[in-house]
Image 1 (cartoon, rainbow, N blue to C red):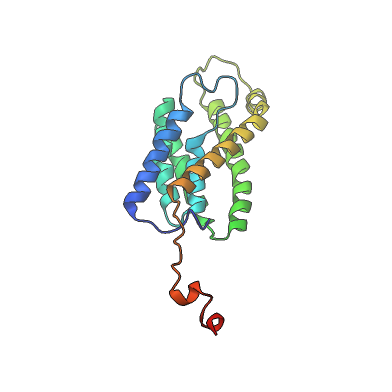
Image 2 (cartoon, rainbow, N blue to C red):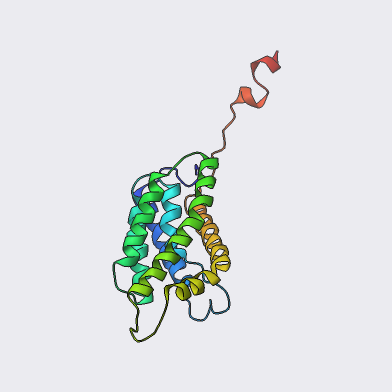
Amino acid sequence: MPGISRPINIWQRVLVYAALLVVLASIQVFPGQWTRIAAPDFLLFLPLIIGLTRAGGEGFTMGLISGFMRDYLTGRLYGLGMFEGMIIGLLAGLFFSENKKMFWKRLLLFWPAVTLVHIISMTLLSYFFPLDSNLPLSLAMILRESFAGLPLMLVANLFACVIILFFLWLGFYQKKKKHKKTDLEGYGGYDRAL
């Protein structure tokens, strides 16, 4: 995306990304906020959006950082969220394009794909490595429970993508410079004077 992918110095990027991480992580884990509706996974989609909008390894780096925060804030073992975030950011960075149409097509393709892969991988991990080995769980039952809320999860994650894009647009916004007219241009140029 041309507005977001413009070159800026490293300190501005660090400031924008740090503010994004703090705000989105606090929204995501605010206690009691997401009890009635599906919670958008901001930290899962942050490396996807940054990888698709910025060239280079920024999506990979943000995947590492946001994956660590996902692991830390949910109390999981370290490594799974970081690995997932790094892979998402790396793959999204490979599909970077300055073309707006290509960006939107890729975002509309990757948003449900990331949601589905995340749900399937977490389902398989919970089946193969259950928290309580005494629970008799079947893979079909776990898959059915996981996919029951899929439509709401897709809508919530689309909301997360839109919010992240809005914050990135605000962070990388640059006012258009006004072209100062010369005296001749103010009067319509040389031809108008004749």
